[in-house]
Length: 296
Image 1: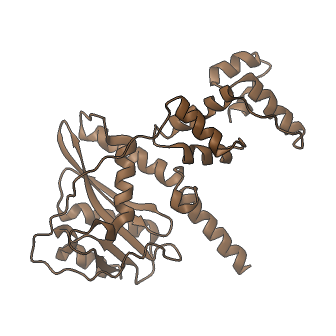
Image 2: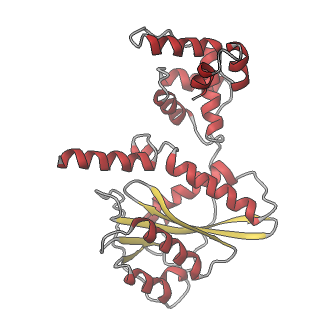
Image 3: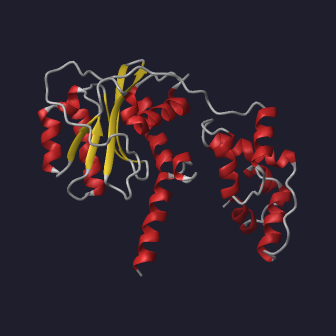
């Protein structure tokens, strides 16, 4: 897009000035222009200085979330052919690395006498199509105004966040609203499994009745076993590593904006290692395209 803008305005502005304003190199612009004219022209090996600029741009785009594997995959997607060893070496040399993960305590309160659903999932995290299994969990964020609680509904097939809710409390309304959002967005077929922990919100009559009204099945992890809901736990780690750790939020609104921005980035752009380094939405789009091709 930047190169196209420079091309359109090359008569108004010197190329060097336009490139500097947009943060791209003049050599990169001219190489791109030459490839457009002659796509068979062999590409020259990118210099370390130029490659470092691209690495820093990808790292900044992810707001420090990407380590070298995702940076490398993103560079390949951008058409920059470079070895993973070279990317790893340059990032290590210049101290560019992903934010480190931290451990966070659970928010589950399973000390109640409400009915508990069986574990239908049994750690089978590989459904064969979208909207067969959703997982859900609650986490929390501290702000100067007090706690903010977040729940998501995660589609296990594409790892896409299909529903979410943010509130200053942990009442059942928090998880019910996320489920309603997911249902309105996806309208899944009857029989979908919704897997959660044994928290009182999920065991409540209100939430269980909502599941039944949508034709969904409730599944719950074993007591105090976070591995039974590992994909959602992994999502929390990625969110807090990328956007929460080390930040201070003056208001709940600030924290909400940060979370919503990351969820959009996660769904549309974040390269997911489980999905062969494409984003959740791209993975699902590719699957639907393959299904249409197979049916044709």
